[in-house]
Image (cartoon, rainbow, N blue to C red; front, side, top):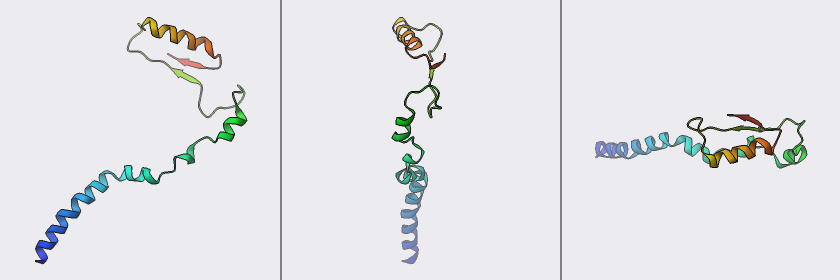
Length: 92
């Protein structure tokens, strides 16, 4: 009976241990504090949109398309972004 019990425990715990191992990174996210790396609201309010202040998020717009022939409906939107904010950098 001891051997059957040991085999039953082994067949029960090995799959559970494997599932826990595979999902360990997801389990770690439960306990991760994402606010630790965030920018506080007071910092954003202090800096506002002044151009002389170093922003935590660079104002760069990356635009991609599968080739150089951008459809007309998207060219209009692209054109409005080029002239809407002068402090933006564009990476085509």
